Length: 157
Image: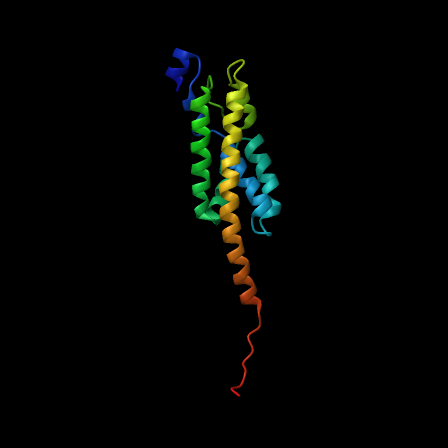
């Protein structure tokens, strides 16, 4: 990334790992469609992740439902595709990977491609996470209802 940035003034390689979009989409999906006990934790995690740049905050959310790794992959892939198509790149590593760090190392006049990639990653990750959470949360609630229903022994008639 550094050699490419020195040669052409920017590099897409700085954007591969540090994009805050897919994590934002996942956390938004948890906020709106996650298990009721987890929903209140998502807004704080969004602030820490998106504005603070600490991506590790969303790892436990993925580990609660490992199938959500598919949402993260889809969000990351779509963001990288958007970066490629729009010619986005950064002049240095955005560290930490917050939206503020992204904007700080965006070349002059190239904010739209960078923000488009972050937004596409968030939207795709949100959509896939929403579908997966709706499918798995529903099953989990049915199990809880069945477990909480008292079982009564009935004598054969």
